[in-house]
Amino acid sequence: MPKKIAVLSGDGIGPEIVAEALKVLNFLNSDMSLGLSFETALVGGAAYDAFGTPLPQTTLNLCKNADAVLLGAVGGPKWEPLAHAIRPERGLLGIRSELNLFSNLRPAILYPQLVHASTLKPEVVSGLDIMIVRELTGGIYFGQPRGIHVAESGEKVGINTKIYSESEIRRIAHSAFKIAQKRHKKLCSVDKANVLEVTELWRNVMTDVGREYPDVQLSHMYVDNAAMQLVRAPKQFDVIVTTNLFGDILSDIAAMLTGSIGMLPSASLDVNGKGMYEPIHGSAPDIAGQGIANPLATILSAAMMLRYTFNLAEAAQRIEQAVDTALDTHVRTADIYSEGMTKVSTSEMGDAILNAL
Ligand code: IPM
Ligand code: MG
Image (tube, rainbow, N blue to C red):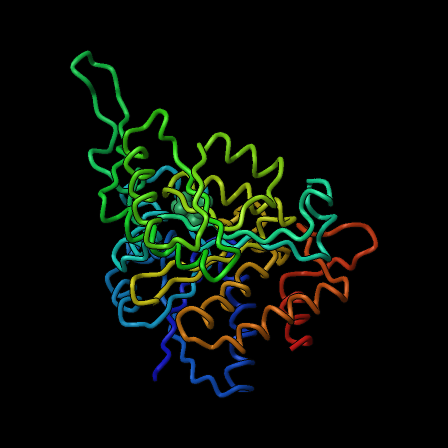
């Protein structure tokens, strides 16, 4: 089976971190004869600069014809003045939507070596292992009407629409229940059903789908409480399923529990397991080009790609184990550095993973 990977480095630290993930993938590709092949393309601000659009048709076609997409990050201050429709972020959102990558998995795992890198107390976070399942192609990110217009009064108004159909909720529910079945069988659905009708429907459909998974314990939580519980007692969660915007916010909180947002990988999957893999952090323009970004979230995203799209669990495990081993040797990028450790650059961290492999 051909294993074609579209590689989109994007903007900011994107090219630096993707280079390290490719180092790791290339090594395993020859070491284990995985048969992976790579093709690169531009996306985001880089694509805008070259072609005047953040998602050129050639890039989209490459992604559609590939079996998986590995993405760095998009966006930066340089493109902020652009109209929303041509912002770098639209490149990313366009791929998610065009490829129907509705199920976004964001595992927040605390490596024991990084207990002290977290801003939370060790006893609160040690042993943390939660999975956030974020709906990725619907909700307020894509709902119509949207935009900024001038009302009759002459005043400007901005509008976005949070909309979910029953079928959209149903399919993300099935994804989340299936994941919970393979873990500790606890699923917490996060909504704002006390205020927003759209999430009242969300809650009802989750409950309904839950009848098909009697082995999974389903609970519901309002999003404000969930944000609080994530920093108060995060280990109460096993799997969280939530809407696009709530998932965006809660996954950043979850990331900090693991010590740094530079540690969190993600997989965005369609119904067939085809997927895009990217770190959950952004393009970090403030540190771009300095060689100090943490490549581990991208390297761990590559591991998720091997596991979820290509069914190469052993290769995925080797990467995850190598991260563990490398952290044992006390190498740390700046974001996870603490006293007594060895501060390393982006590429030195990549080398440390290679050495561990
Ligand atoms: C994420 C990011 C994106 C999002 C941005 C870059 C559009 O924050 O993947 O979490 O909001 O989904
Ligand atoms: Mg985000």
